[in-house]
Image 1 (cartoon, rainbow, N blue to C red):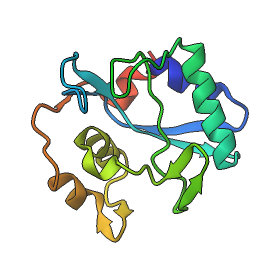
Image 2 (image 1 turned 180 degrees about the horizontal axis):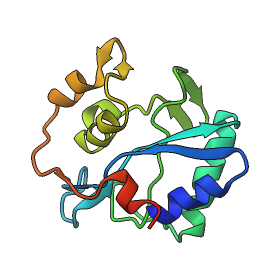
Image 3 (image 1 turned 60 degrees about the vertical axis):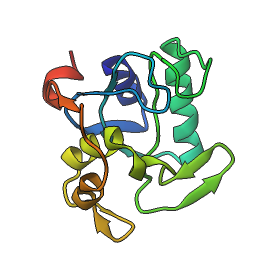
Image 4 (image 1 turned 90 degrees about the horizontal axis):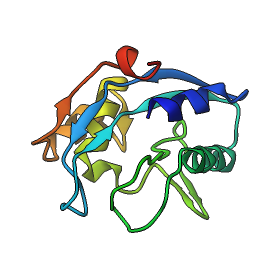
Length: 148
């Protein structure tokens, strides 16, 4: 994950401006696999949404991401959760991420990174309180892990 953030940050039109702590979370979707590691990052960019998506997919490819089964084990998974306050419905890109409000492994790091963030008229803390957070463990802070 730190390699993914460093790769994104090295792009001339991207700056990683904030990173949450690293979280160990139970698997989601397909439960017979190891725990996940999750984090959220804030990027300052001068790219269009599709350009950012292509950069994220290329970063996954460089890091040897292989797409074998939905919700199965994977080395890296970079999702675009939000793009300012825009609503985007394009081929291969739906923003805000369509399932993020169901997933504590997304909301916990995002709430840490952007406290008070309004998502659909509700603060992120309320959204997080509405989902099951059992098994989520905060590990290293953003300053400790991503530049390592």
